[in-house]
Image (cartoon, rainbow, N blue to C red; front, side, top):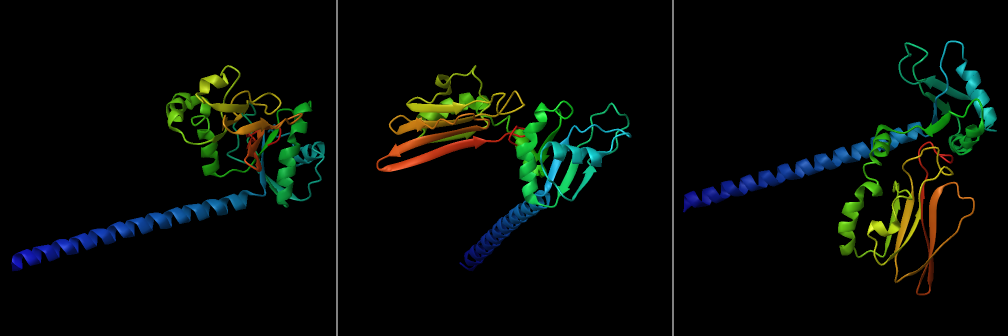
Length: 260
């Protein structure tokens, strides 16, 4: 009897130790996750006043400061003080692709103004190849690079297999990568109204990617809200549910777009 009691006590102690180890591991993982989130937020905050300028020619005879000022003038942007630097190592030959330039602005509002106004450069004879982007963290860049793999166009088979079991009345997608070669009837949304806006030359200088889609179950009263001269990949749909009127939307502003 004593031996059985001692054995049960030992087993009980072992179980307590295992539980403590599991709790410690969970706490460590949670603490690590919180640290990663805080670090990412701080990193984004540090970069929030930056823009990245791409494709500005780089050679010994060019003056980056004067060129940047001239570009800002072309954008009709009155930018005050700013700092800048080329990213990466100095190129060995002038035939290499020019290094991007990180520009640190005093006002965060100037970042949005520049990104909105950069479509003007598309019509410039000298700066048509120039474009700006926000200063993204490594995590943001990785997410952007994964968009192609997670696009709706690449998930059609999976989507078709899952939709028959879906109980949702509304689906909203961005970065669909759909083109006019893919008909809405091919997507597998039976008993749904499909509203979509695929990428065009009006919305982006890029020929691939982009696009938004909203699917609404056909037992709901829905209507597309028409937007004239739409230069952004967006959709808005009006829903009438009982006595409620609801507007839902899907917006995607692609990287390097006219309205970046």
